[in-house]
Length: 365
Image 1 (cartoon, rainbow, N blue to C red):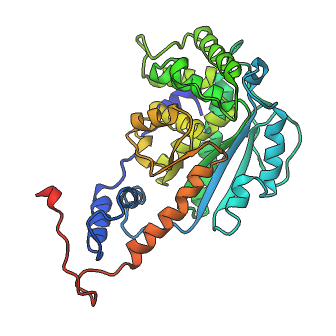
Image 2: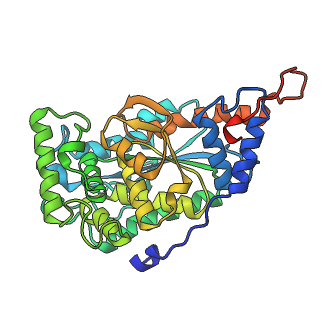
Image 3: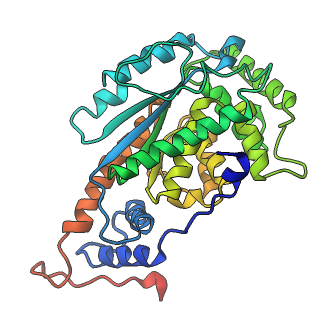
């Protein structure tokens, strides 16, 4: 796909009719109006995305993009890049954190090597490698235009494959040492924020390490002319793609493609933490309307996560100070959706033998 082809993608809006029908069904259940709060809105959103109030969420997948980042050479992480491949090996065996967390839960874990700095073929990990890691963003662009487009296209193709196999709900995750640095740099560029305001400690940095990370992000923003969203190209598709290409990572670009593909194929897609949220923002800026197909799982520990969700107009339903990664927060949302869906499909209705008078929705009178 070319850049112009990507910018020219047109998305249909989710069905407002299906949304309202789903809400009417929820209001007919013998419970207080909006008793499940944001989870009810989420069910209605899923109905709108699928285009029917009779939607199903039985076949689920978690896509985990794995890639290395050249910025690790700047000393912005506690561990080395070799950890990315080691965790990917665990993912392939379903022995990483999310694999163990979901051992008794019906979700397919799909780790993808989109840019691990190794020539090894990892058992259980899908090989879609674009290149062995990215450039050091404080010295050079993360990737070329062709490489970035290939990564985005890879994410879109993976969603298309899942659509063909009947998947109805997708969660997003990542694994890549150094990617809180790349994600924060992209976020600063897209949102006009200062690195000092939003840079976090990632998987664990002391004060000296945090100061070094902030300096690296500032140097990268200056090098690539991305110091805040200002100028004639602020907020444009081209500017968002430039931020992704110069400051991001192959994992972020691949996930941006997942979000674009999910919107194009009408599949609800769950945002995880900072890296996933940054990818979601890139996707929505490059292909406007992608946000209509997204669900927010949690407010991550990194300060920028909530900022991005606010800009996307999304509200996370989990607030648990999560910072694990791998798509763990997005995974945790799935059983919550399942339980709300059980009530949606099987809940006792007003007018049945329950003997409960129907509640009225006064907020619309």
